[in-house]
Image (tube, rainbow over all chains, first blue to last red; front, top):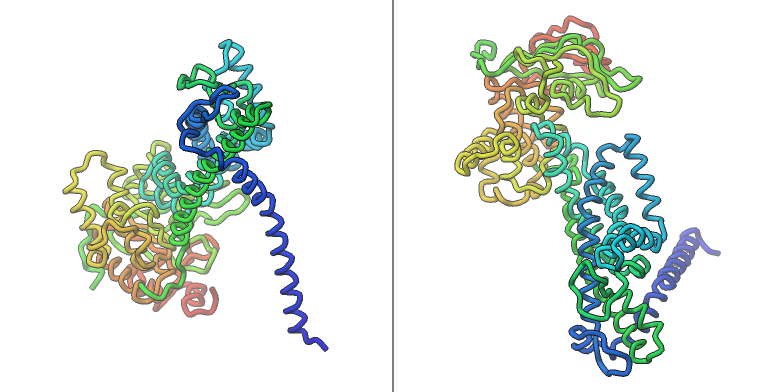
Length: 293
Length: 262
């Protein structure tokens, strides 16, 4: 006869087993992708892969230096747009929580973040590429910036809302003006969370292909000119993977691996910031009924 | 005798006249009139939810920041009308310091910068030496200087709860306010921390007009000159502390201070 304690232990073990299985299933695709990338791409990852330009089909060697630099330029343009506008908008949303305008902006931001990314590419094409008559890094960067803008805005809003009201009131009671309170107390306290959101936005922007197809377009040569077409890692992968040449297809894998490494670096940095933030938050938590003075 | 001490001309009286306040559809204060004498400690006691904190928040106009808040009536600090249409709220709050129930140090700033924050907000170009001496004086007045002198540039969050609260008092005092509002400043502290803050408030007498909300009847009796008993948003009785606690004139006051309700 099983006692209640035995039954509880058994169902406890069963649930632990089920959740363990679910967790394992969840990481299987990631492990497979990673293994596949390593098997197919690692062989191509020579130092010259990071330093050279793509070589024509049939010529051995060549690299994706221009695509790495191009991706960095595109992400930099995107963040230059998304960070100031997104943080400002997020601050507005958090401070005017129930205003009609804030509600409309919040709704639109959510719609914008649900928009298929290729739509943003078409938008940037219509807005910049067509009038200017040529593809450019500007248009690609702007498309990526618009893509991550709602992400930065909503994350900033959430982080600012986590700042205790008591802190804002303390600053106001001290004779801080509204803007000084927002900038020096609220934003500074929320900064670690906002930085994390920016890093996530950067990873997102670095990995997007669709908005770049008819904006940045890609470029097999060196180009640092934002007014000209520019190479980008996702575009390089897209172009190489479709090519009929075995060497290019192998380089597509290697490029994907490079992209993965870049994104991993960014998110590890993000995690480090999150840890610092957790430390900070545990310090903020009010200490009620403390025994020492 | 406390009553014979000379008051400082700089410390103004605070007068609340027919003050009503509340939130949309809910009235908290009902045409309340009370006066805090210049350079003295006024204690406001009363059961939870009677509007004690709202009284304080009407004096430095924090109340109106809450959603749906309304205020009517008058508040005067000396001859300064708090609710006049020409009143600069930021300037008002620079004259009126406030300390909250729980410590609210600025989490990203050091001990020094916490105290300096208010001064920096008011005076753009201040010499480093002057700033240092102002911060030191404020920390000494709050009785915290000796405990933090070797970690002025460490995080304020590393201090204990009681030290954080005294840091907040130092931060409020650093800008040399005329009035100090305290909302149950010792509610989250232990007896030692409480005692230090009470001693500090006693020392502030004459230079600052103190208005303190407290739940703690003994505390009100220990450190205040005048006590106001607040019930359901109205003043039941306001009298010199000793008189209110020994010979209250209203039956409800007597019932409350003897612990029969609240």
